[in-house]
Image 1 (cartoon, rainbow, N blue to C red):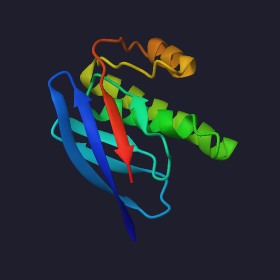
Image 2: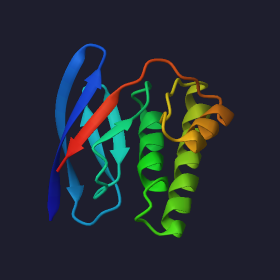
Image 3: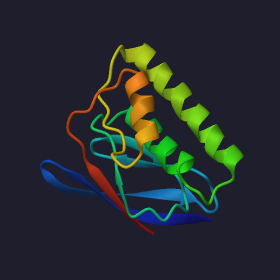
Length: 132
């Protein structure tokens, strides 16, 4: 069984609409949009998240990291695993392409510090609104 999530990606040129399927009860899925792929956590009731200006695998990994690592409803071990997974993906992507530009969540100082230590810099951001 899968759950349909309608999502709207807000960019500087206006709304872009897309949708994605999530495994029922799963911990993550993917949103595929005209500007790239973002991985997100299934079942997280966050309506609006500040995300990243880099519509790439690195941005998707940090988005997933943010939703998973900052969700107090999840067990601590799951949150810690999300942090490790996200950092491993971002490190791999940085090695692959040499550099990326990511705007981390303005509400999450920890992720801002993580992104800074990883050498990612803020540029232009976008928001995503998700509704089941």
